[in-house]
Image 1 (tube, rainbow, N blue to C red):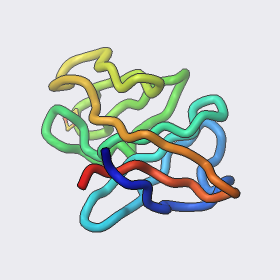
Image 2: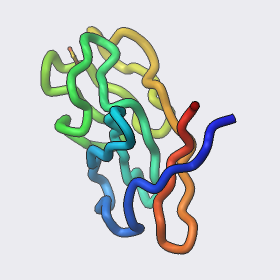
Image 3: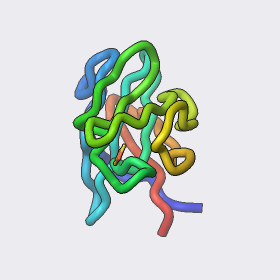
Image 4: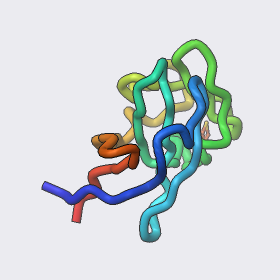
Length: 104
Ligand code: FES
């Protein structure tokens, strides 16, 4: 089990958008999907494009490098050339602070 680290404050990620947050040397794409915060590695499973710079639309994120699309709710790939499911992280909000569980 990992430990939770602070990555921002409630309200930092607007509804229907994504933001890159950093903890240590990791880049994490933090989404606000219909009011629920969801976090994945900020790296497309094709060849690592930054998902935080992608297009959020109708519950999906489209990587701008080559067009792979993923479902934000669960990270499942929807279109080629995605290489597989996105790696996700548990997210919680405690006293207005957004925290993500990171493996040691
Ligand atoms: S790196 Fe994302 S589609 Fe190629």
